[in-house]
Length: 409
Image (cartoon, rainbow, N blue to C red; front, side, top):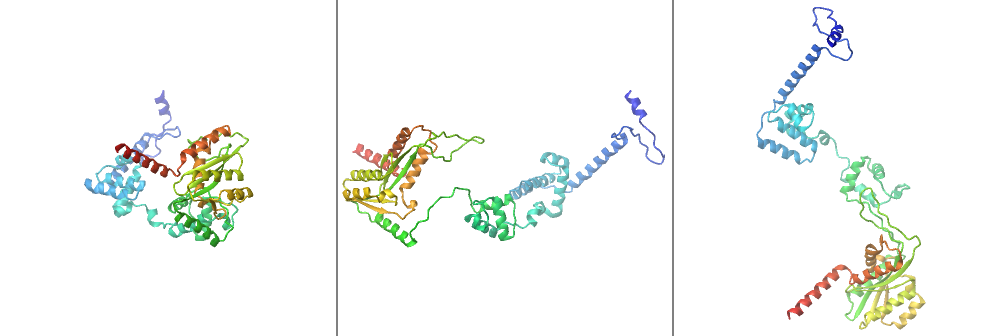
């Protein structure tokens, strides 16, 4: 049945001087002779291309290894593929076999081999990298470095923070060169730029000379501190029941939840850090007032009963100048206050201890009441003295060494 339909759909050739073929009347189906001709033509073309690949002289294994080692120095995957093609072609393998091993089309094999035959190793290099001049050069990097130090608002934009697109736009206005987002990412990597949180500061109202004078006085005090005198850094800290939110590791696609009580409650600390050995003295209270500060001064006098003078280095908070504080200082004659320049927390060493307190206790905490939180704060403060931790390690090693000597004796 099928053969009858096939025969019914066939016609003879019109002229005898042309090649006769049996064609099919069904659309989209080639005749048997045309199909055979296409196959034979493909085989002939493949044999011709295989012969072109065979034009590459046979090379020893040492040469092939040298070629691959040379290509790896460019750190370009496409370059390594081209070198592998030439190395395999030097073993007189066919284009189809090489294409199957590499995982590419035979046309790429012929193109690569012909390039190598025409120009040698240099012909395998990426022509775009040879002919194209690098736009983001060292001068461009320096321009981006200066832009990152500034703000977009310095250049007439309302946005206060930089984006890569905005950096490209402003840098193009200054250099006349416009690069892509990926190139800008590489530029930011070369200049070691990073995304971080800016530090909020308040400008010191004192002149630069007055500020240097105060800091020099405190520095000389610490450098020439007599053995029978003590110097401490003093400051206050707040403890909030509403937890401070800080960075934490999380799995991708998930965000940790910190439950807050809603109604915030506060407690306050006043601490003094010994500038010589890192010993911490602290008091706590439900209010941040002059009474809290006076309690700390009284505790310092109890802590250092043999000290001829106790130097307290502190900031210019209001409770440090109040009438209650002045009256207490008349009774505590060994206490002497040394005020830092206004708004200079970086020069108060105990500020770093408060940062460690928040990082280890109050940030992202899970306490539901203020008493439990204050108990954990007190435990951390007692265990943190002396601060920093390297002083505790040194003290522990000294105690262990003294114990060992006493045992040996």
